[in-house]
Length: 322
Image (cartoon, rainbow, N blue to C red; front, top):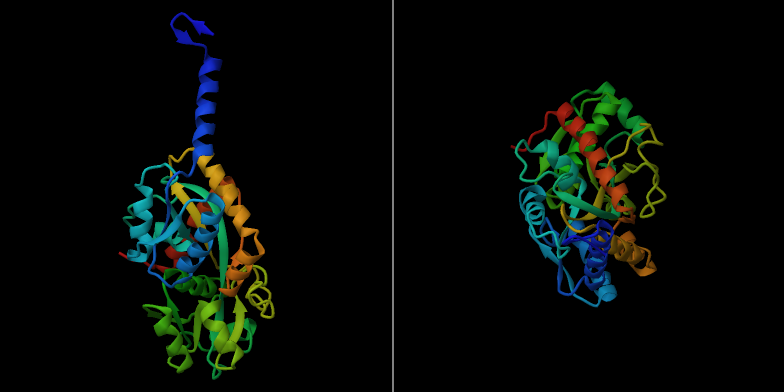
């Protein structure tokens, strides 16, 4: 119906809705890139490739993982923040790239909340506090007691900002002083711990568990709020001496901010569907990762809350990357 030379408001709205629906139904009609903002071989890369392969099967179109590492995940994340908001360039963001970096870097090239449309988390990766066998502490409670007797004498290794800040949160909540020894990567931090150069480490479960099982290291606790399916026999830090402690890395798909809502919803549905497949869950658990999914709104709220949480930890620790 026309009023003068204009379409009625109801007709305009219907046309917009039909157009948006058509866009979502046609999506994707070409290759989709999921940018991995880290080098190949790491946990983010592995999780992305597992998800991308299943999306390829479901869409009948190629969904590829593209590594764009550099500057703690900033390079790849910025690429996606500035990409066309059409659903064909996505990022597998992490707690580091989309929560910690917001406070760690004084001049970040993107806003982790404003510049992205959250789709869903895909996996959680708890870390583990592991100790060299020479450390006379068999659990978190004993470690805290030991650290209070020997302030500033116990060293811990970490590789990367997320693991370092897991340690910073622990020391702050426990009211203890540990000496942080940074390493460029897990390939340097783990041998240092095995060799007794440092007493403790906040490390990934994947890198720690083999050494714990052989008795070369002692597991004091996992950093998730509940026991992880990847290693259910080990207690959490919270239940073994430090109530309320949680430091878990999440991995999640995000799109550029102006991506049409219909495409975000379509992506969310397909990724959640993939994550519920038994073979995908088994592949993720084998990497020490726990499959998880959200609505776009839930994930957006998690990002916002974690920016605030880790911002406080960064402020208290005095850490700055630039």
